[in-house]
Length: 278
Image (cartoon, rainbow, N blue to C red):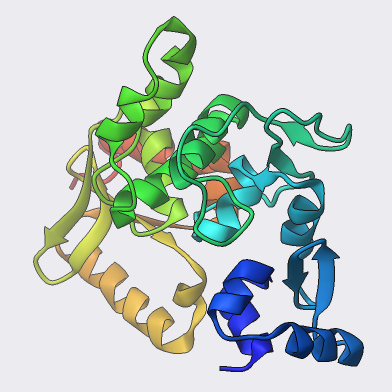
């Protein structure tokens, strides 16, 4: 493996000790620096010229990315990208244009300038709006990267009540951000909701609400021609099977949840009024 490939596999940067253990000599580093293949981030640390800016900034500040800024490193779901750096700076003062978080109490990422996953999620639960924190935690818990029990054990006391309330909204399985947000909206409206229900002739549906209304949440893959044809067939089978059906896309669920809920409640109210009965 050449030097650039090694650095790329390590997230774009490494220290001289790691490079030496991997067999890269000082002379080789100097040649790569002279050729512009790598850059010196700071004394004893080298990286690729295309090192992600957040990682480079954290290394230069001798800090760790956390909260929303660390989500891409762990491939966590997010609703919005970080517009400013969220940092753990230890005893050092964080720059004014960053969001400073408390101390990191768990092992950091093995090679990236990123806080450990537990610290990232705990910081998110304390820092972010509830839904933004929820989708990050749901992603990590759903993949089995961390357990709800472990997070709860770190969030005792009255000051962590809000964070624990977000953990209460994590569900056993969610296949997408849309499912997390839609489920949360339906539950908060007091609706009886069953998820991932198998309906004869249709297959597994995302939601069955009040035992009569099938709701599907469609991500980008549902815009592909083959999937459109499949969804159309499923919609028809849903109605033939005696159920009502609604479909919502990303913009509906993420940006206009109030409009989504208004349509769901309108259909349920019409059914209660007898609109869909013979």
